[in-house]
Length: 470
Image (cartoon, rainbow, N blue to C red):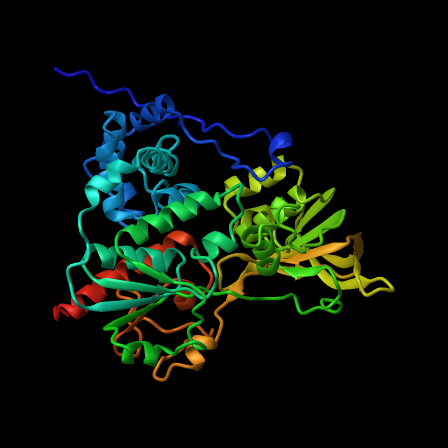
């Protein structure tokens, strides 16, 4: 009679930089598992017959299988299993919200801490980076078909779709608007959360599959979708993201030293303001900074401002901590680093000095009423509670919306009332023949992994369409 395996309900902690040290640098906060820690965590997995974790994964990774390979010390097999479904594992292991997806549906979560799936995914990806011949030997020759597919945008959705189509043998070209590939992975997520060499490594892997990437190609300007199709492409997948920022629309918002989070993070990350004076990128960060919003972008902006020299940084959010959409790990990291959370607070107006620079923000207190259409309790202003916070920099992190350049130059694309492209959720098909869409352009601002899931579904349907199977 075999002895029943004793279940360890506590996950192995991941080493991190100490808060007082990391708030002064842009190095990665989480340091990753060592081999012994990864094996110990992997061996917590009970290898369920019905693996709930798989149901929670938007890209259908064979989670128990790759974790079992880690536990057995067979890293080439762990790489093979993971990369067969996920071409961007090093990215997902760092920024994917596993706690509300695969880890939430892990069967161990019913009794204790779920398996640290994201941390193990990162471990496999980092091991692969240190052993590049492993994936090189598993790759083979991808291009085998004479049909061409254009992918617009090189963010997570575009890279995933391109990689999957290349593995299926198609000739794939990515058309990227910026001078660097990676989309939001490069311009939007800070170095301390997602190092740029990790992103570049994943991009290089996609290129190694035979995918061509053309930079500085603003579709809608340099060429339209119709012109791409006329140029001999058999299908187009639109994944340009949603890069148009949203604002507060309150008095004084046009004062100097008020940024959108998009501009602030692009200057910091893509234009490398964090490497001053090596990169002399213009960015102004004062002593007191206010960041408006409660999502991951707000956390990223506030933590960047701190590292760029601010003495006090406020997160101003109109709801409570419970309703805050940021990942819990990111809000905890921000608080550990000294970010001040000014919750149940909303701005009324910005106040400027004689030179037209912001010097303060007038706010008022909020209270929570009944839930609104999002399911969160509606914030209601409390009369007579106005107060002033002195600041010299403001960053508005309220989210983004799609840029209208592609829809406005493409006939036959049906839009939603929010300006996103209307698609079939299961396939990514649009109202226009031979055109698919996924990611933020289809859903509005969402997560990296949801964009990747859309890229995978679209790649499968494009393949079916081009093979005459649908």
